[in-house]
Length: 421
Ligand SMILES: *Cc1c(COP(=O)(O)O)cnc(C)c1O
Image 1: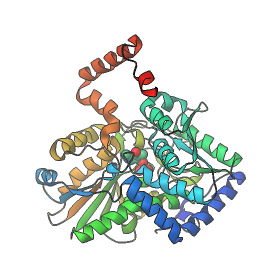
Image 2 (image 1 turned 180 degrees about the vertical axis):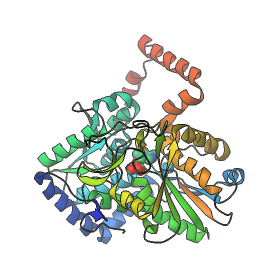
Image 3 (image 1 turned 120 degrees about the vertical axis):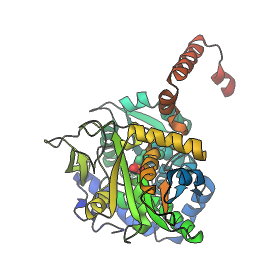
Image 4 (image 1 turned 90 degrees about the vertical axis):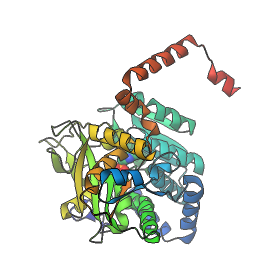
């Protein structure tokens, strides 16, 4: 089940969109299959991966974690060392390069916490494309560091004021823009979901992670027992799992956001949660957190990248088949994993990736020492200082923020005018 069949993974997936979006989606599908067989395109993509993204990313053996946990050998795929700090750049660069080949001059993207917007803005700056990022007004206010970074890359961040003013409204707005400007514009969707062919496209561009792991393990005689990744929309996990999904082994494990508990609205567990339902939302059929009337339920997670109410259709199908196992990780377990790997290995996980770290800490004990557990560290944790600092050292952090505000309001130091001149 590597590629979809006519856009479907078993019963999930599809292309449930308005008539105006059919043409751009069909055009994209044809171009995608053409360029993925074009040696020139693939060589250009590989050069950018090497020189700009910084691939391949290391597969790090974690000796202290292995010793402390007992059981399988622990390895960490350091995807967070990719330029921009996370795996999202793999997809953003792939799609932007594809769009450029298709003659598009303008890129649009949706973003929630801002990580996908940031990766797309960087890719556009690198490739010389015009970039507009749709972002819910509430997210714009909450995620100023990412907004500021997107603007540094030269992107326009368009605040979306409709609906709940968060991610799903940003997706709707981006779809509307694309439907109105299909000839000039490509819509870079940020995870392995949405209407076909996006789940196939995003998986293929992210599968570079999994193929590197496969090669690295072969070269070093590592016997993989289990692979663990966190699952938001599902792009880092499906890319990491890709080379292995049609095989019986190794175990593939997806870690969802368990938030603060199992209650409705307390987590984002689309496969393991109480409110998990089949539905058709935003152009594709999959599993979502919905109420009895099919309306989106609120989600909760300490990690901004794992709180989407839906999951990519291929993962939903692989879960149904039993090929991918799902588990949910609580906020506090993810925080503990951040501390554990930082202290014992000098590796700082992003909050999202720490869900995979926490799940792996449990699974390692179930496996014998001749087997390896590979954790995909989808991102690094620098971006999460505003979340981890209040957890680990709240009062000092509040003091720091207050002092910063005072300093800015007093205009004591005028950085920007000095730098700009
Ligand atoms: C966005 C994000 C995720 C979740 O998205 P997926 O599509 O499920 O990979 C996970 N980790 C990091 C670091 C992210 O930025």
